[in-house]
Amino acid sequence: MTGSKKVTLKDVAEMAGVSPATVSLVVQGKGNLKDETRESVLRTIEETGYSRKAPSTRKVQGAQFALVVDDIANPYFHALYEGLDKVLADAGACTSILSTHDSIARQRQLLHDLWESGIAGVVLVPATGTTYLDLQEFENRRRPLLMAVRRIGQSPFDYVGANPMVGMQLATEHLAALGHEKIGFIGGYQKNFAYSERYAGFASSLMSHGLELDPTLIRNGGSTRAFGYSAARDVLAAKNHPTALIGYNDLVAIGIMDAVVASGLRVGKDIAVIGYDDIPEAALQPVPLTSVATPAEKLGEMVGQALQSWSLDRSSGSPLDITYPPRLIVRESCGASIETENRS
Image (cartoon, rainbow, N blue to C red; front, side, top):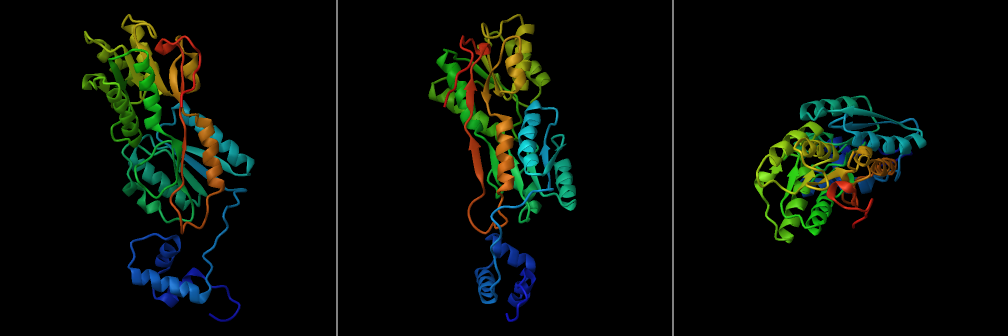
């Protein structure tokens, strides 16, 4: 290509006889393209001197980002937002928070509207049952769609969160070490990838200690305090009820403790209870709640840093995958006398 005019992606597409979208896929190393098509585009890129390089980071001054969560009432997501907004605000950007109300259809519409608005990037806590196919149309964009807290299985999207399987192993191992043999698991939705990981950690720990995985002690279908209460009342009504219960999250676990008291039993004495997330309310309960800590504000800060360093050149490497190690914060609800304990 002669002259001083800068070669554009469109120029490359015309010379290679393909669409600009095809050139974009080749540049990003993505797409199910024929080898000869990919090679032809790469050859044209070399011949024209088209630059595939892009700045390693973006300037976010004045940019707008969005955090999209499944349940805006969950205090964990408030803390996640605070961490994210703090980092981006320091860089001169602003962040809004939106809720899908755990609806995949609403999630799709929100993402579509945000992309149409020219949003600089979106952080998504996926709605229950979300798969890669639900988000496929938002791939290959020159803006990030980053998964936070909850995975959707194998996907090309970046992820920042904790390790749910390890976290639940910490909780179950602790109860087994205290001598509990009948342990129940309450809360969550089976369609959530996070549920699968937490349940796997729970089940594998039971099996490693030779303990029974009793299906009558498993209740799923909700992640609220009300669900924890109703499910635990049902489980505790049985003659041979469990001596320990783990909540899918802290809200469920607080509901479990309500049910223990309502059943005439004592939290931390008759029934051990452990939650997940370590929201501020966990330590403020009448019997302080033992919980798996996955610090939301810290994760939010990590997400903000990932957005700032998000590269426009997605042509090489695997998706970003940052997992924060969970910790078990031991309090009186599981019968322990120490206030806090870190387990790795």
